[in-house]
Image (cartoon, rainbow, N blue to C red; front, side, top):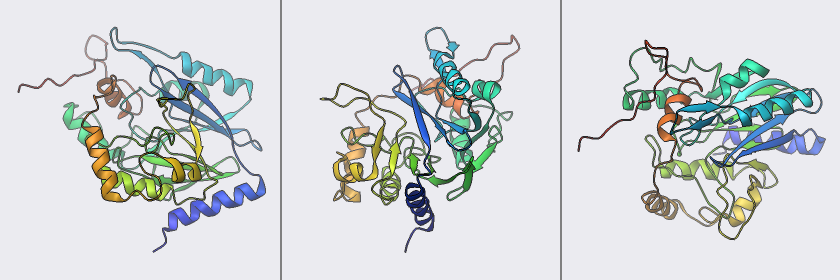
Length: 307
């Protein structure tokens, strides 16, 4: 049976391209975490969205900073953009979100997928966050379900649930462009891992095939690039067609079982991201630090195994 959400997204992409009604996209790349933050705006109304922002964090000292986020604010100011949305594709495990800091300076509603509640439950238990930590997604302004439609100025947008890397991953199709978070990387690097709590390689395969059923000319913007061997520049934009033809893990012809076997074996060789402990605890709170303790300081917990 046809997927009605993908059919709607494909129709939107085709119509926007035909009418020349497409977003302008500026990307800010954070080298320490290999993260691409995208600022998307409607040229007709100057309405903008910030997708997957980064807060600078030094794990040795616990110091936070906002140098990259300030560059984004400067760009928004210079271009006279009005921020309507600050979007997260998922609860990131490799960088801390700058969403609350950005909202204080440029506004916008903070949005994420409605499966955030499952992620909050999983990691709330893992980090023993206590009863004061709300697990209902209330730290966010908008919880998107699969197929949810919204607007960026005069540009139509639609949210797609693409779980597998985490249970709550979302892709946002804005005009003719899809912002797909941690599902696919550049064709020469492959696909995201699926071994975090709540992740599932088989589910990731289905999410990727769903994305790759969009029109071949669909512009895809990625959340990360790790610069594959043989390439000397970071890249974060590709197309559905390029991924279908050339993705080293999941190009056309790779079946589900082959992918799952590859992904499972590969994930078993990977170490955890350097910033997973602080990132998850902050990002599951919408980018806010844990509540300060009685000395006014926030603390990140690190579970210690007794085995």
